[in-house]
Image 1 (cartoon, one colour):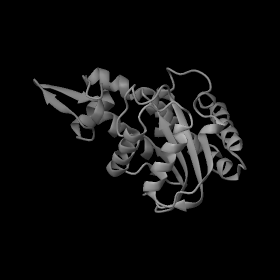
Image 2 (tube, rainbow, N blue to C red):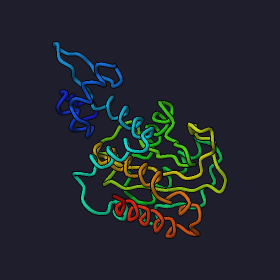
Image 3 (spheres, rainbow, N blue to C red):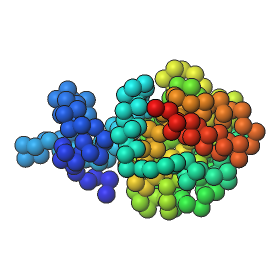
Image 4 (cartoon, rainbow, N blue to C red):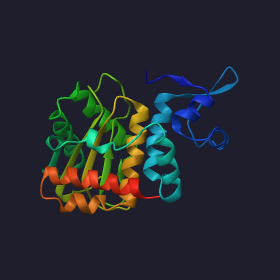
Length: 234
């Protein structure tokens, strides 16, 4: 139900932000909302896209706060459940942004958990047109424009690494060589995973570990090690 409508309390809980903070965002017109019958409402489709873009821009204490709030409903390690060596390609041949998307969908297909690869590719392309998912440091966190239970059999991630970087619209203008494809049918799980990966990227040696790994299994080990390191931080 991508067009489910939330009231303010439901939207605040869904986005893991205090109601007062959401009210300020509405007042300043910094979050997409509608007014129906005199009350403020939010469509899941719009706030999911807004939240994804916001998380990609978070850093420092704000990212820590969001990650901690989003993690309340999850316990223990997440990455060992999401990524396995067969779903990792350490030698992507992609040379353009469009070929990265096509090749990463093919990597995701190895999991046998994708239900509609052409639609997945279409939604990934729409998401990149809306706003690139590349972040500083050479990492892109690919995800569909919208999420639906029918898209994947269960939540998982595919990972790819190119030998040389690809122009992918990173805000620092640098090339991107590491790609995570987040495959979640559930939007809340998606937002949590996105925040977790951003935190791992900023607060641990995730990127250097992936670049130094000699195999798909080594990349998985680097990802799991990064999550362990993050969980140990205060």
